[in-house]
Image 1 (cartoon, rainbow, N blue to C red):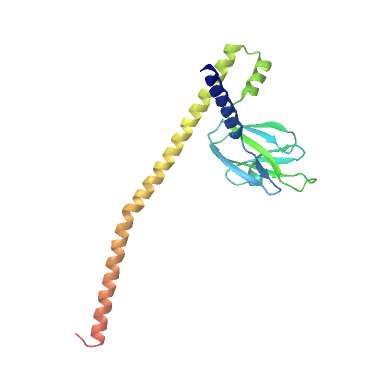
Image 2 (spheres, rainbow, N blue to C red):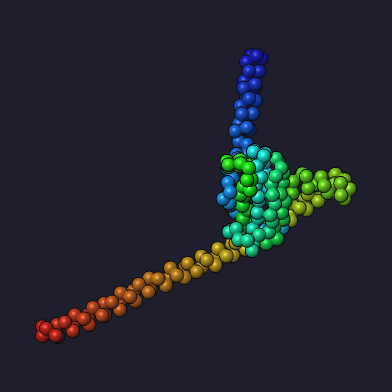
Amino acid sequence: NIEHMSKILLLAVLLIAFCSKALATPYFLVTAAEKCFTVEQPRDTPLVFDFELVDSNHVVAFDLFYGTQPLTELRIKHQVLDTAKGEIEYTTDNDGFYCYCLHQISTAVNQPTRIRLKVKYGFDNNHYMKLIKEKNFDAINLEVHKLNDYLTMMLNEADFQKHKEVEFHAQTEKMNSAALWWPIVQIGILIVTGVFQVQHLKSFFKNNKLI
């Protein structure tokens, strides 16, 4: 029984390891043409773009923009990714959409670049390790600082969702108003059409001396 249980436990461990590997962040291909993605976040949200160049001899450009389109005049951040791994940090300063794009700038290669990119929300451990060194935080001060950061993010998210709810309510009211007036407009069109048809028939019968 013990040997049987050991085999089952071993199989379970191997299965977990296999699933963890299978569920790892997949890579995607980057070419000279820009590949863009969008995120929607409230203000003061820390964004961490965690990247890994699978093809470490390639070079990729990263750009971050306001809005949903990669417009040059709305570019916030530009960074060249020329290391195997790294992070790009940015704290949002407005509510709404942000667009981030990647494109290959390597000239020595004729194949797409494989890259893994994960977007994290909130400060990571590296950020807090820097705070410990810079401000000499002890464990209690660090935890208080983390809780304060989490609370700020939650309040900002709540405000953002409330603002979106107000916009959605306004759109719903507008649609309800349009839905209310549309049948009235249809009835009016039918009445006007009926009147014109009656007048046309009367004129037709009179012109042909049928009445």
